[in-house]
Amino acid sequence: MKRHHLLATAALMLFAAPAIALAQTPTPAKTATQAGQPAQADKTFAEKAAISDMFEIQAGKLAQEQAKDAGVKQFGSHMAADHGKTSEAMKALAQQKSMTLPTSLDSEHQQKLDQLRALKADQFDAAYLQGQIEAHQTAVALFRTQAETGKDADLKRFAEQTLPTLEQHLRQVRDLRPAVASATGTTGNAAGNATQQRTSFESLMGKDVYGQDGNKLGDVADIILDPQSGNATQVILDRGGILGIGAKQVALDYNLLNADGDRLVARQVTEDQVKQMAEFEYDGTTVSLGKRGAAPSGNTQ
Image 1 (cartoon, rainbow, N blue to C red):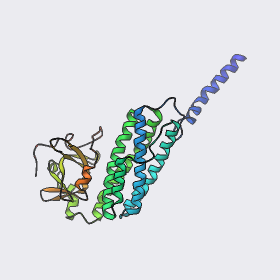
Image 2 (image 1 turned 45 degrees about the horizontal axis):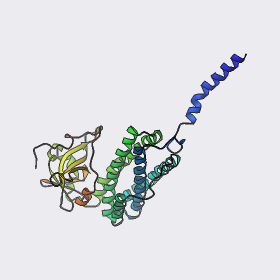
Image 3 (image 1 turned 120 degrees about the vertical axis):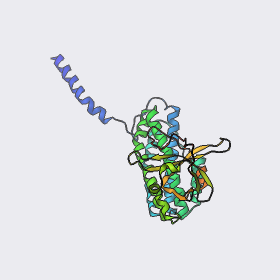
Image 4 (image 1 turned 45 degrees about the vertical axis):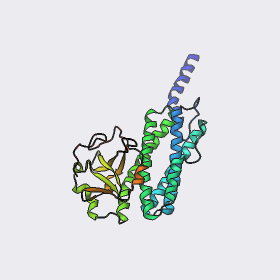
């Protein structure tokens, strides 16, 4: 009789186990504190993510106040709301893991925010959207790395769950940027908006690209393609620096290019903006026309 009772108890526990495990599955905002402190790489991720959220929230609020285009205002509101949610989730995780997060922007992001505050209307729209492209490219790379190599299970899960939202933000701002640029009336020749349709991608390789201020931004080293449609999404510029010092590659939205005779002009982009851009990095999902940063030897100008 006692043996039957023990078997029945064991069976009950076995069938109840999945339900118990499901109920205790950790989420980014509600997890049990793990023994010991997270690894330094995990702490660095958390700190960078916290600063990124703070910047997005403050820049988004600024866009609602200073942007001219209604779409830019709406995007700013969307960014402030979404990053407000991820900020709260990260704060909860940090508290559970006894991590101290930054409570103010670092000097790099504060400088970018101050520069935005000094701009109004069209100038603000152009600088804000370009900054959003750069910021979300950086954030996507940061969260993808954490999702793939993070040691702390909760922070890794947080990165995995947040990454799709960041990728969606990047697609949204890339789609919004050309439309806003066209609406400002700074497109020069309207036919330039059809660059992608009338000019083969190959003919652009090696060409010089100039900003709206007339200064050279770099030369075309590669063109990033949409893997499904095959359309160009970004142009990669080589900036040679001086004797190789300061050389880097940056990405501009393809649809911002205008053909101006034998050269290309990037609408609403200046040399100062390009200098502050993060360096472009290829990943395993990148589809491009040429090899990584290696433009064909023949210049087609």
